[in-house]
Image (cartoon, rainbow, N blue to C red; front, top):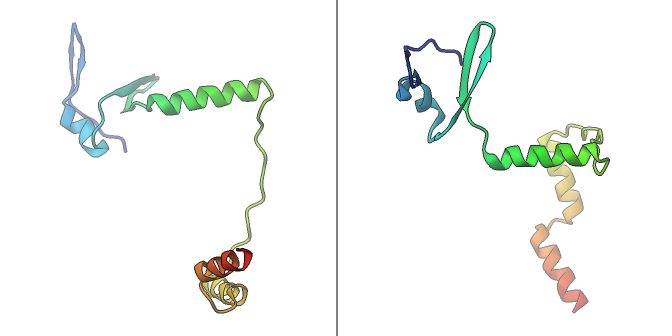
Length: 107
């Protein structure tokens, strides 16, 4: 969402009314500011853990330790087909009962 807001430039920096920016984001303590040719973008700061995760994954990819694998999406199955398969594979019992019976048979 892009919104024009009133701001004040001071020797200490740019003052922006906090409620106008932060209210829609919830409990945000820090923001990031990016300067673009025609705008200044203010957004909630990414959490430190997500930045660290991104950095670690990038370094592991660069070292050849991990790679992105393209997985085919599973086919879409209608809710009716899922119900039919669940009934057929469960032998008419809830999965929890099948597991309990299997554990009893192994004991």
